[in-house]
Image 1 (cartoon, rainbow, N blue to C red):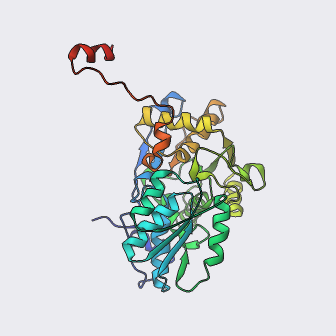
Image 2: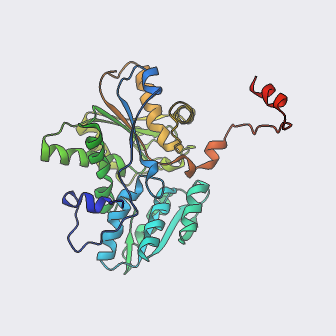
Image 3: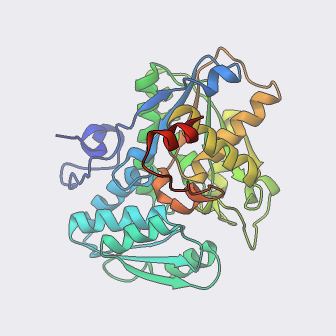
Length: 347
């Protein structure tokens, strides 16, 4: 039977013996060593933390387990969130698990079909609003003080606490902290959580600290520009955020780790997306590929040490965004069911 992150990491989390041990089996995702991309770009120890294998298909489940547990402990009956997709799917799944109501507010046209379908399947109340994710988040924050309502966006500190457990796993699986960690940055809670996790391990065990590299999409790069983006644009919908809630803590993680937050173009993201699928067998949503796109850019610039362990965080599964999988692909034409016809196609 799967052990969830609350049970596994209770000593590191803000929980008590009375906190419900809610789980859908989140965590314990694989750290996959690169078999082709790494060797091709001169990196001997490149790894992918494949968070798309969490129960609802993204890293959000780690934080949602803790946030939902503490919400129940506080007497909440509703989990509320704004979302570009992954948070809505995760909140809806854990609400269903716990017998709570899920209310998710999403930007019109800004959520991948697979993610919206998940929330609907889990029985969530879906509210679509005009404008961006940032406007949706502003709206739900106004409702968060209502009795019985728990806001479970990454402004909820329990979300960050749960998500930091991925850093613990990386160290456990690798046997040490990586020298560098590449991670997509949207609302910026995850880079915040990883840094917190690494720092806690360092203070408790003397583990080393990695350098963090955050990847934003060129059209949605407020942390790179140093100012909010009013109308963020990118194919990577999970990071299509113009004013991250965890802005200051993400900048702190960058600066304290001696790292960077940089922008990559949609063409670079989709090229990395294809390489992950075709060279590593890893199907991810476009936002995940942003981290690999930045890695490839830095490797091509010769700014990485090929002998040091490097981890790329792949935040969500490819089936989250089926449109991204089919974009630019040609549907094969039907052939006659004969060996001659088959051999002709195969060359």
